[in-house]
Length: 359
Ligand SMILES: [Mn+2]
Image (cartoon, rainbow, N blue to C red; front, side):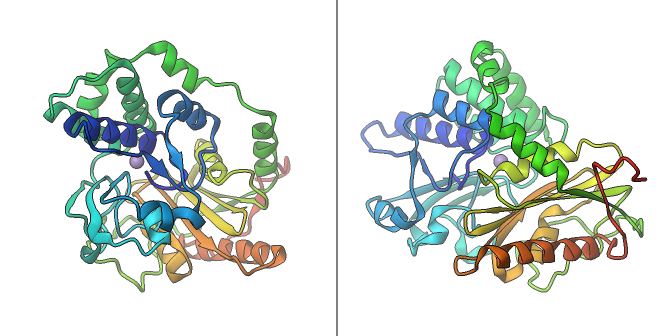
């Protein structure tokens, strides 16, 4: 699974593990990931579905991975920067399978079997298709995990959804254990969650989109990424919400905050920039056709870090191991005008979300 696994990665990873065990009963197989599972729903899901999953610290990754003859990647792919192979010099030719739905990366980092379908809404959908093709029986636990994976990545089939996603969602639904699903979706939240949200709202600014540009940029993701892409040309309507989280307790807080703020009326972009340990974490959500959020974040992060994503959701990381806290905060502030410029709102004067006298 990729680092900091989300429900789709956990579901697809668990399904892939089960498929390998089904096809090769004698092969030792480990389900693993880097980073941490933070969001309460995701942690509960992982504890219920795949408590055996191995969390591999980055500094141990090279040693741990070298013991394996083959690696299979799910919800990510060899050229992406969000998995443990990126941190090690693990030979990429040992990656025998990548099942992913993110835009395809450079061809020289292909897996032997490179099944990357960016149009599909969830990696769990692809794995549901694999299990059906293998005529493997799906139990309640597996069905519930895959269903939640599809549901969460497609926001209940409301974004980035294909016929295959609808098929998977419908086929799995009748086998879902509703009690298990409820346990995951409606888990009790720790106090730190509410403190984190309060902190985020206090540090959220709204900027008005200045030029409402028509979405005239072609949306097709090409295999070769454009290195010099600046991101200018993204459509923007209404407001951009920008949240700064100076001290996150967990890396996926940024995506949770971006998800929440995108629900605000008249907001077409929600950008959350946070600091977790020694790195900056970027999470971007868009609610506008042809947003190309992935290209926007890749253009801004460039060679300073890793980034990726889809049309309406994207993320990035910038590692700053040798920087001090003040330098990280300055860097975080520095990202804001770059995002605003790329969205045609460089001249926009922001106002705090919680300012009652704001527009
Ligand atoms: Mn996914």
